[in-house]
Image (cartoon, rainbow, N blue to C red; front, side):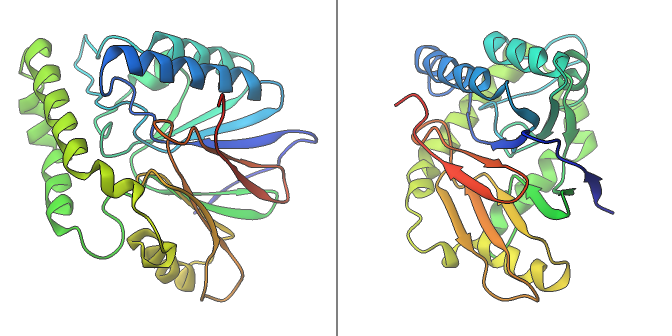
Length: 260
């Protein structure tokens, strides 16, 4: 069942995804993080809610008494926004699917591990990172089932953090090296698995906006088919595009190039 909210006068809803903080090295990650924090400062004046739609980190795993070091600029600024009354939503992606309660307790996020439907001003938003949705990519879908298997997570947690975080970060970098260029090769949005997924789901459970991350290419297109008009949005990333979306109560706009 969808959660419904009323957007206050002069307020906005913001969306961003795929920062991959920590990648590919500390130096470039910190520069990207500084741009993102500047963007967070710029939206603070009118943000009522912020959705971070997965892969905020290039790798994230919460041990009982340890989390990956770094990212203090981003986490501190997000906590500040929360303390100022901005509602924070975090939808896990394929690089940070092991988030548990640290981001909720320390930052103030409401964390979701599956896509959600929220209604703002009678506009229905379906929001999810997008990994494993739509046709194809059976290999990853199987791998995700392994990674989200509770006994596997329990066993991984027994690795010392220096070993576990180091190993997983190395695997994450290798995955991005193998598939990263494909993320910028989107030419026909209608050929995308996420677009096709949204088409099928829209015919069953209509929404006004279908918002995803994961593919790293900013796109805002009409969603064809279904019983009503809708928009498909891929949020892009902060590695190449510095892109984000904003909803003003009536319309969704996609922007790119912050700080450039």
